[in-house]
Image (cartoon, rainbow, N blue to C red; front, side, top):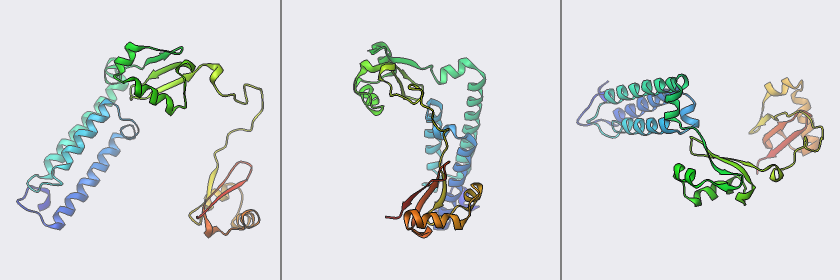
Length: 234
């Protein structure tokens, strides 16, 4: 364990061992913190990611710094992070302090300037966020809310929303997500058998419809009506 402590110099193998241990330690720490730290980058998540990345990076590039101190510090920070997440779930005031409540930026086609300043975003950024939602006119917006994670949620006036089948009373089939039955030239037998089908049925359909063999297919999916959609290698 010579590589674990501070040294005047390290061999290539010792540097490699440090990198491997540091990588898996950081992987485990992130796993313990949960998916929230990956899917959302709010105030608490940003601070933890910034500090942990900085702490673990130093011993991986400086032989005079041992891994023990950094790993101990990271472990304490992860524990504090989990405590803060728990408190935010149980204590409303603490949660509001960490993640402020969302507030409107646009209401009934009018920009609320004081809230725009509160969000600390310039007009150009607001317009950019609207363009991302394919909104070309502020007057069409019934409500735009600035979320705690720094994103804009927009809701159009009803007359500017696209028609749906329910608006014109058209009956539709229930939603069904297509399932993958071929991936990179390999058959997903588990999904195929769930549909009550076999390899012979699949190959016959591929030959008749697409004149393609399994090995030529990058991706193939099947829907609720047993229709196969095929994407060939290009």
